[in-house]
Image 1 (tube, helix red, strand yellow):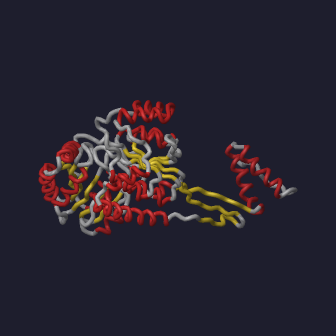
Image 2 (cartoon, one colour; image 1 turned 90 degrees about the horizontal axis):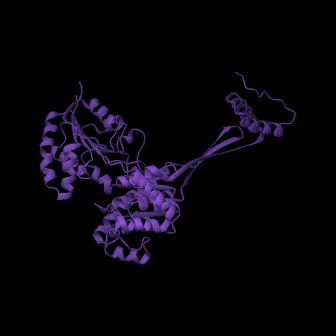
Length: 435
C-alpha cells in the first residue's frame, strides 16, 4: 500500500530561508582585504565583545577555574569516549603498497592536514559537545595546529565550559570570535593563526553559507542545514519514549524536522497525543523551538510493514535515525541511508549528541544519501605514490603511449616515448594509436 501521512509537514527545512549569500560574500571580501582590523570591526558589530581575540594561557586557566568539577568530569568522560572511537576509526586507514606488476609498486599514504579550524557555536546554546567532537577528532588525526573558534558573549567572553572542553581535547589556539568573521579569521590566517586547511563544526545560516562559499579554497566537513531526526517504531515501542525522543530533537530549532515512521496506527496516534504536553513542559525557549518544529516540519507516516518503513527511511536519508523495533539486527543490515544510527530503546540521539563516542557532526537535508559525518578521516588526505624499475616501466609506457595517442594527447604519449627510448635503446615498439 502507499504510505499514509497521519501528520504532514506544512513546510520543508528550506522554506523561508533567508538569502544570506550576498551578505556573507561581502563580509568575507572585506575581511580578506582588510585583515585583522576588518575582522575586529565585524566582531565589535556582531559579537559586541572587545576582549582578546586569541585567549592567553592566563585567560584559559581563569576560565577553567570557573567550571564546576562535576561538569569537568562529564566533559572528560565524553572526551574519552570520542577519543577512543576516533582512534578506532583511524586504525581502519593504513599506509599500504602492492606490486601492481613485477617491479612496479604503487602505494597509499594517509596524511593529516596541517591546520584545522573548529567552529563551536556559543550563541543560543553553548555547544560544549561540539568542541569535544571537532577538536578531539582533529587531534587524533594528527593535525599540527587546531584552532577552536567560538562566539563570545558581550562582556563575558567564550563560555568557560567550551574553553575547558577545547583545551583538554587538544586545541592549540582558542579564539573568541563568532560568525562569518570567525570563519574568515581561520581561513585567511588572521591574528597570527596558520591558514586553515579544513573548516569543521556546526553554526548558524551565516556560518554555513561562509563554509559553502569557501569550500574548494579550504576543505569543509559538509554543507549543513537544520538538524533532522527520524524514528522507526513498531507496536512494541514505548510511546512515551518515542514522543520524548522526537521532542528532544525538535528543540534544536524552529525548522528542525522530526519524523516518526511506524506500521502501527495505535502507536502513532498515542505518540501524537503525547507530544504537545511534553513540549509545554520544556523551558520557554526550548519549547518555542520544539513547538514550531512539530507544528510546521514534523511528519508521522504509517506504513504497511517493516520493509516499507525501511524504504521510507532510506528515502528521507535522515541525519539521525533511531530504531525502536524488534529484530534490531535486521534493521542494521537493511538500512542504508543515515548519518548515525541508534539501535534500540537503550540508546538515543541525545547520547550521540553529547557523550557516547560517535560524532554528532552529521549530514543533514538528505546528504546521508552520499556521505557520512565528521570523522578522523575528514582531516586526512589519502594520497597515492608509485615507483618502478626500468624494466617494469616498459609495458606501462607502451600502454600509456597508445592510450594517449588514441585520446589525442600527444604530449602524454611523448612522456612515455622518451623513457622507452632511454631505457631500451635500439628496441622498436608499436606506439601508434589504433582506431
